[in-house]
Image (tube, rainbow, N blue to C red):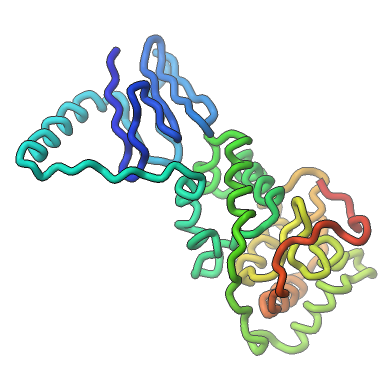
Length: 294
């Protein structure tokens, strides 16, 4: 069976073997195989319904592709015969180019989106970003858009994505004005973040996320520079079982000890705090974690 392959817009051209830096296709009996760098293997047998689609880069309907290819070839030939056809510009083959799929939601260079929900991923510890990519892909952190995007990707490719965004050192936006929260609520939030509540077995946020709250390498994230809506949503997801981490899930344990007033207070206080001169995660914690974490 002969197969004609065409690269999607803004994608590197497919070579004679049907390969690109993203994927390649081979058609043949008894089924269809899709595989390539960064992708886990997917296959359908001759008796299975043809539902193969290249993940995250568009939808190819292979059963009707032959007729469409013929139509497109003739249409392209008609255009090119009058001299108006131009070759597509080459596309850079780099992780920064491939990560453009991420910045549509997470903002330019992963700085966070303007809608106040999608979080900043630039500069986060690589281990934390990798763990979250795994959690999305493997169902511990359900969110259909992320799960669909990541399901085909290998562990090594997720490592590459996490390392790319972790390496970016970019300015943070200014914090929210201090007047955006009630003084008593802000004071309560500060106490929870910096001291915890021993009577209720709630550790201070700083005991895990670092004294500067910029995170701890390799896998504990910072808490500053994040929208309060995002922080509220994540704590709520841990409280209701909508978000999970590797067992023992220490964040779920802590979140379930917080009242709605606690959550509102600490997220409002965190969102008003300026970032230190160095926003890099700390190399280590001065003492052991106060609670076991997976």
